Image (cartoon, rainbow, N blue to C red; front, side, top):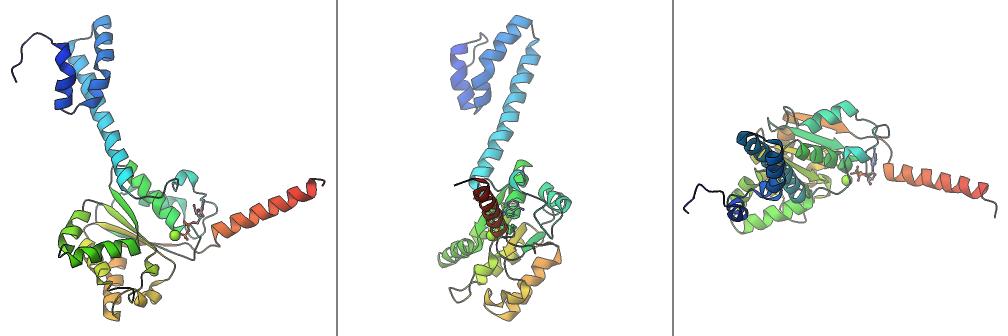
Length: 265
Ligand code: ADP
Ligand code: MG
């Protein structure tokens, strides 16, 4: 392409498209008008437009990472009641969500507790905040991940698939204890754990403590080896309260009952 030194504004849209600068494409006319009106030095206009492109590029990237994450919508710290969560401290959760250290060293976070105590919500909230902080996160049911890895193994593509998953700084495996070794061969889960060990982070939620993980892995030695790797550098969250769902239902029930007595029939 030959360039002339005269400003050919008609060519700008296609040049900006060719260079993939959509934000400048949307805003240059506005800022050029401001610059003309206020007598900006040329370098100021150039700097303003480039800064705008970079800032919006960061935002677009974060939006893409949210879209690819599989995170359940609405499960963030904004909708999480820290008071209602027993066994976890707010500071501890926010430290995990900042990603400092543990994500960069490929450490692990484990959330244990009965059903309904907020394990998945907490994991999703941590994941969502990490994405806002520039990390890449994948949230998946453990059974879905096992199926995906088994399909890859059948296609002789397990290693490539594990390598591709390395793009995620954190993989959240929700409900590990729902995996059953008799459903299919689950050593792929062990492969995933070994592959990421001390390199890329995992967060796992489970209703059952380690003692009942024997039904997840093909043999006891593999269970021990998996647990060993997971706990070596781990933050463990014991979500040991009563079910938030049940409590919310009870409170609703109580409120309705009270409303009924106040409301003369
Ligand atoms: P678990 O994964 O431990 O079974 P969930 O995270 O799915 O539990 O929580 C059950 C429901 O209760 C979800 O709708 C979740 O958003 C909500 N919930 C649980 N704990 C809290 C909390 N502390 N604050 C707000 N909502 C909560
Ligand atoms: Mg859950």
